[in-house]
Length: 124
Image (cartoon, rainbow, N blue to C red):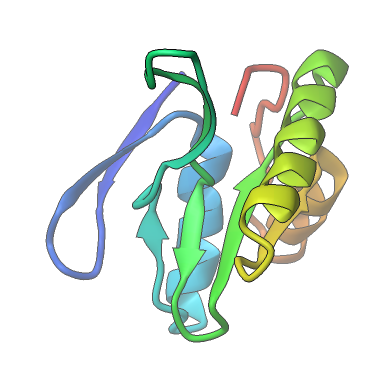
């Protein structure tokens, strides 16, 4: 499932998962500026220099200078994302990244009345 909407600058954004669109709605409600997947961080290259592992966090929040990654129930994906965030800290120690787990995202969506019909079983 993907969701599309327009960001504050009028650009069309296609989210990988509806929970990302809902999170963007919360950010907008509070007037928090955000960008969706603006940067890809290279974590590993092969011997000829081709990128073999990269990480593109879901949101960039310029005001606090923080990247936010959302994740879902699929433990395999959670483990993979946690590994990438650890690698980010090794390769880019000055870049702040946080991960919001499915329970965190669901709690936010519930708090703001956006959780009705939310599905978190798909990859985010």
